[in-house]
Length: 338
Image (cartoon, rainbow, N blue to C red):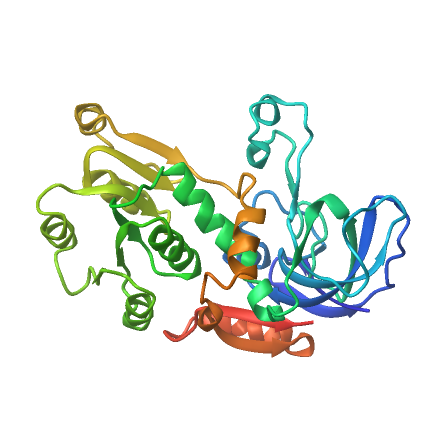
């Protein structure tokens, strides 16, 4: 079988590997049909992910077809279309006992800590596989995982119907947050320096789009909220500056959700947090969001296929990653068909 492997930072190749055998009775064997390229895959390629070791088969946004099932699996049959929940947890640490396995002390993510799904065949625990309706196409199934990230941010921000939500960054994750916030009944504004992304966000239902290069972003947000500020701000960029902006754009009793992993320090005045009694939350991976998002896809409640802007064959993996590096304005989500 072929696999997309980062041998060391800066070196990505399509390699030939032996197809894995189904050994564990609780596992399933999958033919991977599509893989989305995520920003974290790019970080691994560039040597910027502190959790990754090399060589590493990347890929965690996965659509697959069941090839074989272990004798102790239940609910899956050969030929099922599935999505992979790409993380494991220990079940014993404080986070796990608080029912927050996404921040388990020993969490391992496929494609980061373990070899991922950027290969034509993989085996994985059946507990991490969710069946998807046969009518959903492979590229759409590969979008489910990033939408669980969006769903998690909405959960962490406690987004309510009627809330004014401001999202910093209209990349793929910011757009997933947009869609999930609209699904929750919120009014949503979103910012980006990329006019193509802002046009797309508008087509996806954004009530206000802001380009900070062309307008006064705070003035736009406070005008849009009638001077109140945003009830929820989601920072889908994750720089020291955007964290500061997120806090400054809030209403009283607001929630700030941070999705970034930057080590740079932000300067925040305590009075701004205390006076408004803000809640500032990190959001990592997802907590039990998969089945809810799968249901939205199964019942066609999310029209998201146009998030995919480019598709490549596995033999073109280098070209696909080069496109992501060049990042022309029209790029949204890049899918590799396995």
